Image (tube, rainbow, N blue to C red; front, side, top):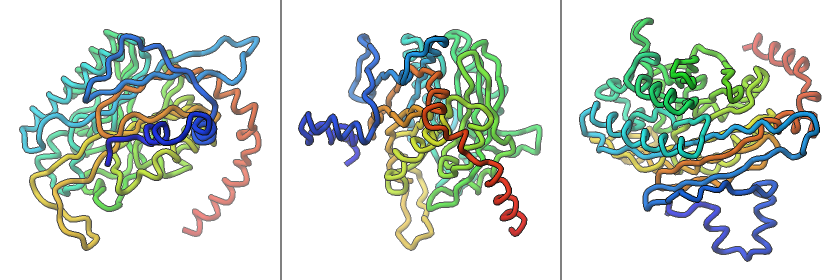
Length: 370
């Protein structure tokens, strides 16, 4: 049931003339494909490339094109394998994908949430899963990616399970941002932690303490809204107020819970906040050795459900790319014209008509009552 994307279903069953109108309504203006002539879509890997250009040809500002890459992938070894072996095999696979992205000149690449491990937070077991946690600045994952970033002059966004040994060995769900010279620019810790169904993440870590940082890179101003934060409009809002031009949303979410919401939330955020959004989800079904329950009266089970991929990008005017596959690894590449952020503000006037003063007063009153 997960082998077809919504785009594949539409292409298969809707006549060509009607299909163009359906896509206009569902996805916005028509966009061009990137020339990825040397790309090879293997049976277990897909690559797509798109251009999200500005909506006007400006006379004064030249286009500000940045090429981003998003990687979705499954785990490699069974969850019963040794922790270090699991992580090393994922490292090897994703390193190959990043190197592949570099051949296409990708400037910024973002990986999925907790990309170095199975998404084991459904189990509520502390061990062995806590052993995947590592130091954000000096752990094996950051050391590996720092070398790759420097080699390719690439900004890499790496979401990991962080072990904060300087503060009582606390765990955090963290994104590490690595600069083109291999140094760590900074990190962002997940603002909103789910307590929904099998998403028992507060068993392992709590809400982050880094606020809403925006990282000024040589390619543009970027921010990271980790997974569950996409359900919170104010979370998206503050990244925009702080000047983000691209907000990445590395995620891990399953079809039975969130798939109807997936194509809507990051797209709405791009429109409301006049920036690009990049939504990344893992793929596959991860089987764990011990049964666990969802607290809903249903039988215990060994898996979280199917992670449905469907990674996509939305422009500030609401135009979006098709999604990647729902069942196999993939690389989504897109050229983003960052001038479109201002163009969308001028066209729609959302920032000008935002009335932040009014809502700030109302929120202050409500918060006081709470």
